[in-house]
Image (tube, rainbow, N blue to C red; front, top):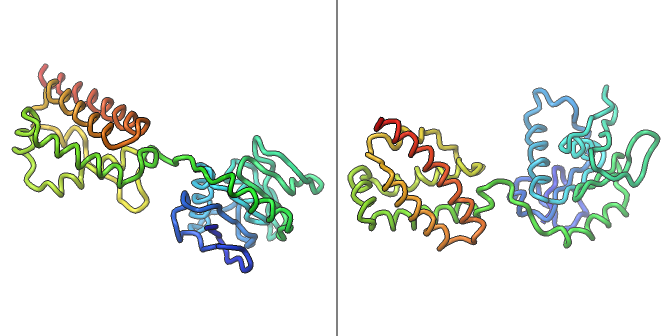
Length: 269
């Protein structure tokens, strides 16, 4: 599925941007629409499009832009934008890009990795055909956040649920949580929201806005509790996730444990 910022009759399998998450698209198309590129003040829709282009590039999603779409693509790659006063805007050559065709001082056709740009408003058939032919070789994706690296919200929810199943059976930690948690579904939801926010957030969920230290104040957390907590978290992650994802979650948990452990030491002092 190709996502497009404007309708494109005649293109195969194209759908409006936002139909599916960008990371799941075969590519993103940015047709010429004459919209602004350099000055996006009071242009929230345009800012949102630029944000999506940046997200696509970060994830390794192929992007093809022409006309104003090529200028927007160049801006997402950090290029300076030229032209204004109602004329066609165009992007200077982004760092690391390769020029295939020049039109005087304008880089007419350039590429940078999976980004393909044609600065003129009309896209040549050969550029379109080359982009479509390259898509099967560009099917892999780069995670856009640590959350995506661990498998997204469903994978994280599974780890949190399994972790607390083990916690409730643990002779040391079980009594602590039994004394302080009355609504387990709500608790699991809050903990999942915390981890989602910690790992980069999810567009469909609001960020967790609590305070880590305040949430654990008064629990009587000691070193032995933290060690048991980390052990159970690590084993749950390793039992449910691939090793790289489990390593990421374990590293974040250890950093959190060090923070909580330091606070507990200061309290005792």
